[in-house]
Image 1 (spheres, rainbow, N blue to C red):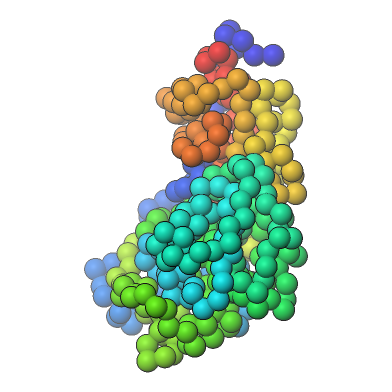
Image 2 (image 1 turned 90 degrees about the vertical axis):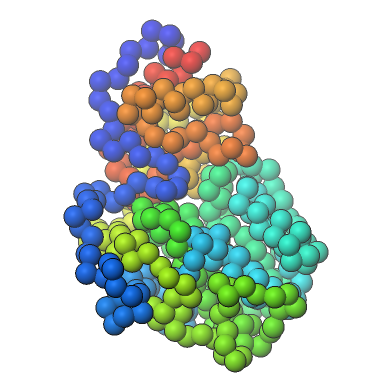
Length: 376
């Protein structure tokens, strides 16, 4: 049992980077690992397009993405990629939006207030998953695979029918490289390098299945589209976007950084290796929680509990105490950026994605004891 005299631990995590985005760089990362020949060059030069294509090819390989799906690098991080999909494809049929945390609510706001689509909205409180059986798949369906700010995820893809009429739009930014995504169930997926890969921000990744391409080529939205969102030219998909010809100028430094992360992922066993590391980290954090009666999981059901952005409840802690605990841990270099998201219930959020070392998660427990005691 902790109290105000709980001693400060002697051993700190070697890499106390537990932020849920941008997340920890891969182990052994150094700026010296980044190739620089593409810097100061046009991204449309032969070399620039070659490096962008290398990045796309590595993502396809590590995700196990089938040839039926296209993958492109787009502006605006995951948000830009998801809104690009919404603005270009929604409106052809009714829409259902699912929300159980702040980012899902963001897509609800876009659908209701910006696109004025009058969607069906299925909500659940933080820590809970809505009844997925309520979803009408004659509609287009918007959802987050892994709720970064609530620590709640969909358990699998079984709830998505193969014979769906609508399109499935998965915000998968905290899910790719951490779960086995059934790509035959996904028509649109988006993510950013800054999450599970530990890459840099500002760039998004857009994945389109064949049904999404069919929608783009057969439907024209009623609203105007900014240049950054235009995926179609003369009624046909702009294929160059998915071959390294980006819509706007990318940061080649960020691209080279993503390639370093992807090559590291390949070196540890690719997608399965990444998933195994996330699973091990989540299990180590589970052990910490299980050993402390004052710690709990915001996501009560293990079947829908995130293995990347793990959200914890702290007994008797309000927002002020959580901020104080997080500040103390940062001052000591024991844990960075672990206060829960501002819209979520007061608590801690520990990133357990593959770029974090399990040994660092294990060292975190005594530090949480110390910070809890110091703020009693």
